[in-house]
Amino acid sequence: MKEIKLLFRKDLLILLNNIKLILKNPLRLIPYGAIVGYFFFIYWLRFDRYDEAADTRLPDLEGMPEVNFAMQNIIGGVTILGLGLLIYQLYRATKNNVSFFKMADVNLLFTGPVKPQNLLIYYMGRSILPSLGGAIIFVAYGASQLAEQWDLTIANVIFLIFGFALFFFMISPIRFLVYTLHTKYGIMEYIRNGVILLGVILAAMIMIPGLMAEKFWQGMFSWIASPWFDFFPLVGWSRGIVGYLSHQNALLSTCFIGIYAVAYFVVVKLVLLYSGYYYEDVLEATKSNEEKIEKVRGKKEQSEAQLSLNTKKKLALPDFGVGGKAFYWRNYVHASRQDYHPLFGLYSLIFAGIGIVLALMSLFDWFSHVLIYVYLLITLMIYFLAGIGRTSVGDLKKPFFFLIPDSWTSKFWNTIKLDLVQILLFSTVMIIPSVLIAGLDWLLIPAFLVAIVAFYLTGFGINLIPQIGLEESWDKFLIKPLMIGGIILFGLIPAGAVSIVSFVITKQFVWTMVSMAVAMSFVALILLHVALDVLKRLEFKEI
Image (cartoon, rainbow, N blue to C red):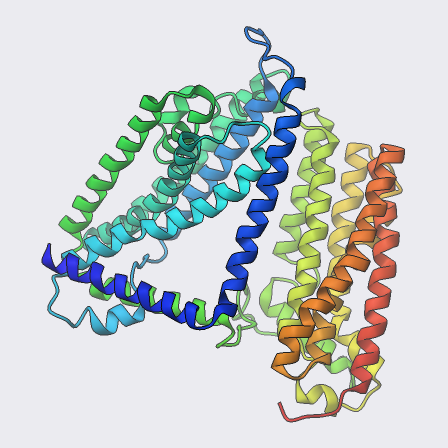
């Protein structure tokens, strides 16, 4: 107990020192003040509307025999997200260990006269603080959107926070226990098969009632959204805690918190029983976590081999030519390593397959066309973000970009040529069968093809112009947010407004996509013109 008190005192002193550092530089308080001001403003608006609409609400209709499919699907959808995260984390536990420590702990505490068991108990218990902090922020934001629907009493907020925090908190100890059992008994293959079997059973719990129902979407969540599923470990327990918002039964939600406490006690006892001298097991995970943090902070360059599926493939590529074509050849080689085919590989097949499967489901009346439209919009956003990230692994600021003898236009075009070919192939393979199978408007095909290229080029231009045009770090810190904000304010928002107006007038998604494609094409062309103009003005510098 004395050692745990010393560890607590150490963390308390670290916290006080960080607070003193913040107070020495009041500018660091600006982001926190902005966040608090944002939440205050949002809640003020919400509660103001809540008071105005209080007298105009319709009374609850109790005793209705019909099933509320909308609420059932909302509960089921949230449950599916939780189950997916749980299965993913359990599967990750069969691949690598989880660590509660940092390299400073490894270098100082592991070598000190402290019992390994006390270290593990303290740091495992302390891991609830990040979960609580994240849950508080999430609930603060989410509750601001629901202030008109629910009374945000103290009890409601407390149970919401505990429901989310305990779920994320328990995942790490369970992952540590899984890896500990494997280290002692070598049963990882059995655990992995058990996780896969659990995923199959959960999938069957969605498919079977969906197929038994008149329409798939009416029955798919009837099992996992039912009250008995609240007893499913972790996901169900958290749902039972959060369910206080509807049933207002504090005793029931408190019992689920008690189940979490008992489960945590059992996991800790098992970890202490089987962990042994765990220092070696967590060293690799701790170092890996530190490297990820350094990459996020920009201290280490990201490897282009990440997520590569075919790194050991022997390549026999043709000679593409000289000059700017060297960039196309370089990207072609990288794409050949990253996937099984440089133009249309496994990743493209999966994304295209999802769209075609959704079209088939709508054909059999399992889902409406709305789900296809949502997936198309999500795909556009994914490629917009891909365009933003493309500049971080590109060649536009490398010395050889200036030294290769060719025109600026040719070098710039060959840098992004392969990306555009991949995008057009993927989008064509996905949108044409989806439109034909689901019976959608044929005009959606060219509109989507133009829109996805425009979104990619817009994202590419948003990040490229500040990156190649600003040299000083202070300029990037001050001017880059203004440039990006201006592009969003005068480019993306007007394009989005045009699309929304088109949908309001026509009530048809196809014209929404057409207007979006046209508007985003103008934005993309302007950004590419500016980017090429800035690129021509750059001079070779030693980087």
